[in-house]
Length: 202
Image (cartoon, rainbow, N blue to C red):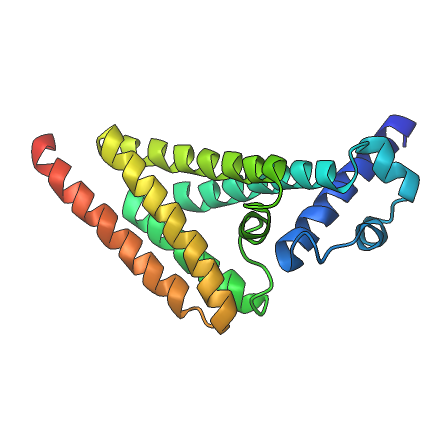
């Protein structure tokens, strides 16, 4: 293994470990030593890759985790067969993951977003960028399904809001009920939007 590969591997481990820990327990509760232990990295490696320290690492972890989660959700959505099945599968899948991990694994961004919204502007912006990327991705899929762009945007924002809120409520209650109810609500919203455009397609 080349030295460059080792260096890149260390950086990726730091980001991946930080993203996992931040998502599970929050930013403040996660210490540098814990990140280093989990990534099997030296203290000097952290500041070599992230001279700005924990905040710079957190910003990178937020964007990396956000992109990874978006790609994961897109695969589920696009593989479901149609628009309604895709929306339903996102919430059903989230409920399954919550139960399977004893409510430890949820949205990798929500935990951080709640914590930094009023305390760290750089990290707030990073979480906002991730959520906006998700909104755009959902909007594209709704438009492809025949829904007008303005309505598609509203549906996308509502879908992400339902999903994020359901993560918080389901984790607090240790129950999938909120996620499953949110999923039914999201599907019903999309059904109503499709009913308005389908007559014009014929």
